[in-house]
Image (cartoon, rainbow, N blue to C red):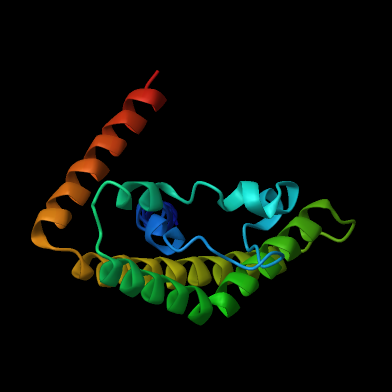
Length: 164
């Protein structure tokens, strides 16, 4: 069981690194925010104003208009294609919260929901990694090298910040 927990945790951690690519195209219609409870507490404009880390990294890559358009198509297509999975994740989290705080706690149902959540998260990780790969292929070799440098720099800064 520990090995499974470790694998799931590792997949989620890797997903966080790959997740930034899905946030590249930040223009969304008002009211179409899928940021969950955090996004519900913030205004749509504030939640998406700066974009994700990858969006900010792309600003340093001098993308051509054609690259920007292609990347936006890739990320918007991925966002649309995986809306059902995001919705299922949100519904599943809500069901887990209700079981945790409700009068009727059913450990078997929690296990079922946890297994379903792990599968959905793995599916999203695969989708995000595929999206990141597709976006990375749009970049020139020089831009790919700069992306890697910026990513490593950001990772080192995060590690320094979180080390106690």
